[in-house]
Amino acid sequence: MSLPPRTRLLLAFLLANAVVLSVGALLLLNRPPSLPQIDGVFLPTARDIPPFEVLDQNGEKFINTDLKGKWHLVSYGFTSCPDICPTILSDLLVVADKLPEGEPLRFVFYSIDHRRDTPLQLARYLDYFSPSFIGLTHRDGNGGAHKAFEDGLGMVSELVVDEAGDANEYQVNHGVALFLLNPDAQLQAVFKPSESLVGKAGLQPDFNPETLVNDYLAIRRYVANNSR
Image 1 (cartoon, rainbow, N blue to C red):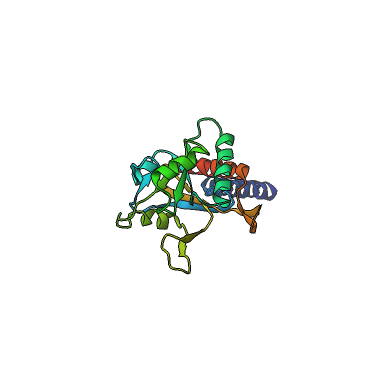
Image 2 (cartoon, rainbow, N blue to C red):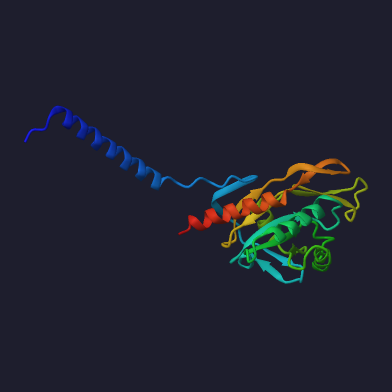
């Protein structure tokens, strides 16, 4: 039976629409999920940290495998830092308080001033903030095993000896960032501060705890949904 031209045209139109809708649905299903929008840099492909060895605040060896199984948020600085370091650690205390109960996130403070920041000094310092914080440092003569941790995360620091040349008198300079490590001990994101804290030297780097919490949760959800 021959269909009228108008009917054939209508059927062709409906068929074309069905094809377009099917292709659109397929593209939508196969579209890669959008990356988390954070205050910093998210690494869709997490970066391995080379094998390292440092000491925790109890004087115990701390290596890559000690970071596995949980998320870690790493800050760095030194215990005699007058303003930025204690402010950031205080921010992290607020982050810890705002996290949903049971969140697998641990906080790490790495000292770039190992000469003064012994394990004991780190333990005393971190007790002012939270005994749950992990402190890391190292000793001379470790063959540079700590450098893999610093360089693997991208820490920036320098010790500037005073003009008199006394090796015991020096100034510590360092960058400001927070490094998020996934449960495979890989670098997953780097959080950057905003210039909002008014200190002795004017505007100083600071972090918004609520933003950090939201960014961390967004990253954790993204990783969980894309690791299936």
